[in-house]
Image (cartoon, rainbow, N blue to C red; front, side, top):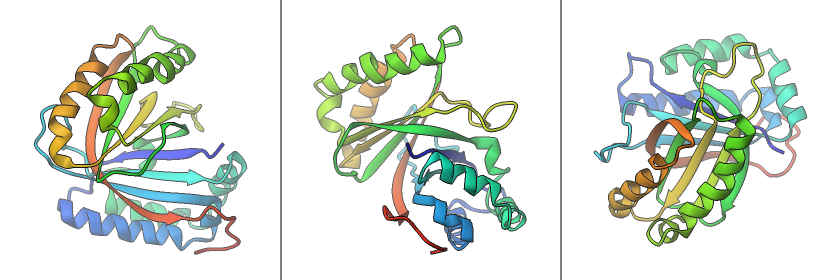
Length: 234
């Protein structure tokens, strides 16, 4: 299992959206230059796009995804504080608040494999209050997934579908990002997104499994992908 850190970011208010994208890439490059980066297998920036589609939130600026090579690698990464002060100072110039305030660690499940499309829709799902975590995870991975992929409009439109179920928090007080699952959907043409999203949203909102949803439309940019074991900083 590769623990996957996910964060839903708002930019530092001093930055424009385009300025944030450049600043975020700079922040990512700094992180990748650090010795502890050998614990990371893959790193992706998802830049939020503004399509003007009702129900898709444009108040966020980016979704970051970081795959650690193993739970042990995650522990080593966290325990190496040699670059902590530098990275936290750089975070303050990039984001509206510290990353821990809007992140979670998750386990990834690929439910429909395929090529990444031009558009990536990301859904942050928070389970219904009276629903247990295990009960929600089972229903979301099984009956909900079957309903989506079996739908005559939604199923063929999705090129790839991944669920990320939140792992136990690493600090008291829980994760800053309170989602129980983060769904990733890849689609090919952006022009089909409004109709497919309307159907996808209706199917999701019709479920009694959820208390709250956030949807963002993004463009995925892969910054680091090294399946082999890294022996030192990149």
